[in-house]
Image (tube, rainbow, N blue to C red; front, side):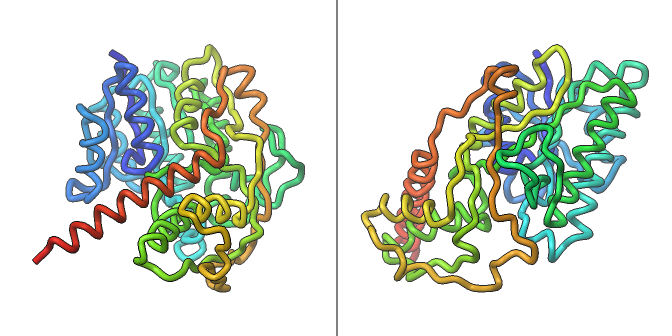
Length: 333
């Protein structure tokens, strides 16, 4: 039975990846910060048999301990301060976790592996935000980076560090340059989930409007469940490499609003959407769209969920959650 260690297992990607690996017969270990973490119950419900280990990407000794206990064949580093907007407000924490955290987990593997460093396969969650102010469209593995946020800068550091450990120590280390990937498990602070949840609440009469920033931003949005499959495929190859994972389509926030509101029978969403300068980025990334030809040709990977299907899936899930929540509130004495 192969063994896998996942950092960031409480997040959207960690949950989908844990499900996937469990279905493939893996023994799954997950890193969590503190045993009082409120998301532990969710992880244990979604990933039966998962073994949770206490640790933190800002603490090397805890990572060494987690590696020694789990003895993994594969390590997936998904842990990060992942909300781009927050990275300006907490730039130092973002750098320590999203950037230096990669160094610490790689060092933990190097220290514990001894002379058998190639035994463990490592995946680093890189990001399309590394491209930032794009030099070419679409973006591919050879496109130069120009990150436009502390988050993007930190991810770029982690990406190059992964390449460096591969070239310096012969580690089987891969990076997936994943473009925006969403799901009903996305945190409510992210714009896609903010919209799907807001639309659901508006449809149910629980909310009057949604306040957003730049409606012209365009992104390449895919389904997180598809993207974790690409992560796994990278670590099954004969040689380590880096891959762009994307749908190859770009859509604006306006298009996202069109699909989401149409799903609940509202054709004109303009009365329900407000803009606020607080939600504009200090340095905007206007358009991101990826070329996943390499992932398709080498990994045999392709997305299975369309943009419309993704948005409708999220709205439907939030409608169900909000109905359930409203029903519970009504029954509380």
